[in-house]
Image (cartoon, rainbow, N blue to C red; front, side, top):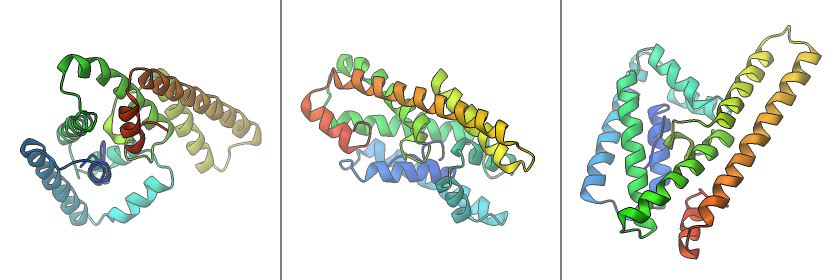
Length: 218
């Protein structure tokens, strides 16, 4: 069901691809969830049509994602080219997150609002940390907020990519940028490990199994 989530076809496909990947592990959607899925499909189709009208190849953008391009950069490119606007992006991300969390709650068999209110922030933290460490993960699009460690890793990644494209970058500069990237990556991985440990500490064994199958835990 899930997102492309933000992007998400590439952006939406990226938002929408995430939704589809996530949905494969989910039970049949409720009527409300199905309506939201249909809305996402319509948005995705519109974005794809806009891309085709401007001569853009969706497969090329997917390839860029596979090659490590940040989905946020793809999203901005689509906005800049008039394929999608920020209001639509925001709405898609909100819909995808709502849909994904509704499905997660169902999978975990949580009926108590109090129990979910305590658990949801921990799941959000794991999702955000996962997206920081693995931008290619279908889960990456589900959360748009960033921790300090995630922001540092994104910044270090952009700096390294820019240096690679610049033929004048020296060996010493590469060494500095690589160290900064590795330090930021290790910090983000540490944050993810801590977030997962915190979440696991309050889960039942069954719930841990469910979230592991969904890719939130290892």
